[in-house]
Image (cartoon, rainbow, N blue to C red):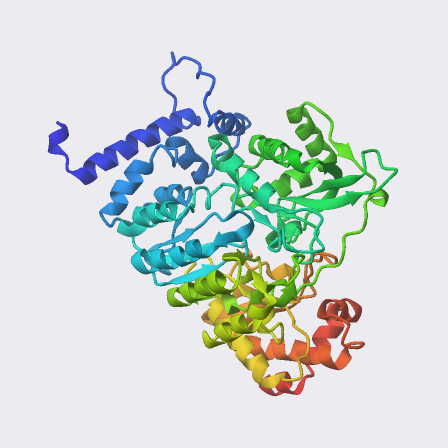
Length: 595
């Protein structure tokens, strides 16, 4: 009989059978009055299956993604996914989800192709890997590369038949993408200047690499209730934004008189998720650097067992913390560990030394005498493949051969001798780029936007460049960099809530018939590092074409009202207040005339 069905019919029957099996496992179908009790789940997926079972037993309904995980593991189904992609097939929604476990995101209808997001622990690449990604983008993608806000790279316009060859090419250059998407632990970030920063108290590179290896080799740590972010901060001059992560480890110096031995410890902060208007909070817990993996593992297993599998909007760890409180969550972590965690009063921890919010741009001396790191401005993080190869050549010939990506959508050259700094700048400028920490471009961050993401309400990258061009033309007296973040949707990939000025995509109604155009809600006064703060909304539903004028008005109001050049935009907005700031900005002639 099987020969009477064509390939598509056979696939339908296989999927139908898998669905029946999944429904029975999740309580959707009875398997008969004499059905035997289900066997105790075993294997690496057992912790997730038990959590799903507990959800169903409590009367909850699993979301589709949980059903898809259970019907066919993305790892068990990889060979099928590969074979179907080789035929040029677009994935079904459930297979799009499964492909993300391998780093591939189907982004139709915005682009009828895959986007691949890599894993680059601590954001550090060798020059030949950087150039190799450009070669792969040419051979299998759209011929360009983006730097992301997790100090990572992504490549777009990968057609189905090129999906697996692209991944194979990554393996050839010592890179990978496993677990870079879906409900998994995302790229591990660490201090971009780790090992070269004279201010740091700990080099985060070994910790980031160790944790990356820990998670990619343990299948039980895939398939969480939702995505998960972990960051390591070494106490250096360049912030890594660990406060925006689910778990942050901050290197601190514990002083004499504490309940633990003095020295370098890692402070644990939990619950950061800036898109949901929350930053990670200090737990009071400190641990030795070598304990980070074990403690992070326990934190995640508590989340696996207790995270929400019925509502994707409430499935992040923050919501377990909100429901339980930090004390209960940490008690559950300690139960997993089989021991108490050390706690230290903040009075016995040395204050963190000041960060430099623009240390990711320009020339900065390293702790190695005669050497420097040089940060390159990459407006909205995009580079053509030829530019990537040229930049890799600069790293090889003028630096230590490494490229260090940052969470600000740019990168730094490291190990540049004093005698080579001028040559680096000259060659960067020849590519149409800059190393100057000035104006608005140095702090300009934008997510993929509507050109390549189905969730985005606006073309963030395009509008970001229009804002930069407008401000450079109209606010020539701007003498300090100001961070402007544009994000396309509530996922806040560009972390708009921590920018000086943040814009989140919105559809703006422009007629009684309900016609809409692209636009933004605008927030101000966000911050990070020494001044962490979620920004405050001051305007809703601003048309995209009017956004440059609104940013101009805010900057003019700041320049006119600040108390000296040392008062930051964030400090000015906090002192002024959102209502007064909005009122003052709306009196700026350019904005008043446009209205």
